[in-house]
Image (cartoon, rainbow, N blue to C red; front, side):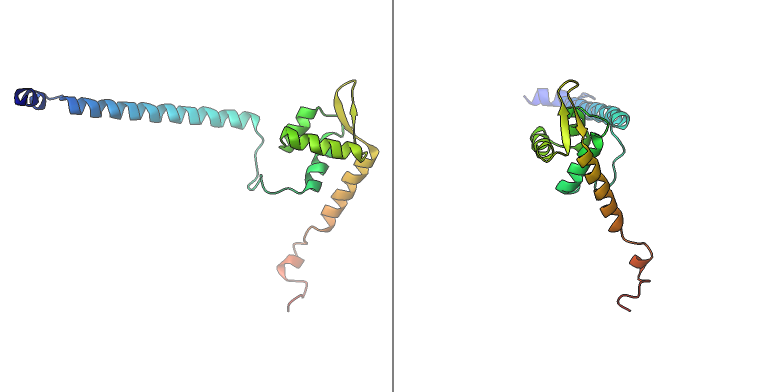
Length: 150
């Protein structure tokens, strides 16, 4: 047994060094493969995904989601297009479409399988845009030039 140990330790490439060498090679290979996968996936995401703002997946109100869905369906949109563009699950989409249809804001055309925004829906979009414009903070007044608190 000691003879085997002496022969292995005397050999320049003993078994322990071989295992370490193989481990280092496999780690290097995994890092290279991982870097390649990351590079390819980031290129694919860049091709297909829109540039996202910071805090893109923040909480959205029901009004924001409904308004976005109505805007998406203005010129007619398939169910899947509305779902993907609004970042909704199929259950959420079903719920919103039922609500919007029941309230006459959106209608389904079974001939071309598309959803279209109704006139009532267009009116709601315009009202939401006017409201959003009215509550946007004025940059001058938000700097304290309004005299409030002076």
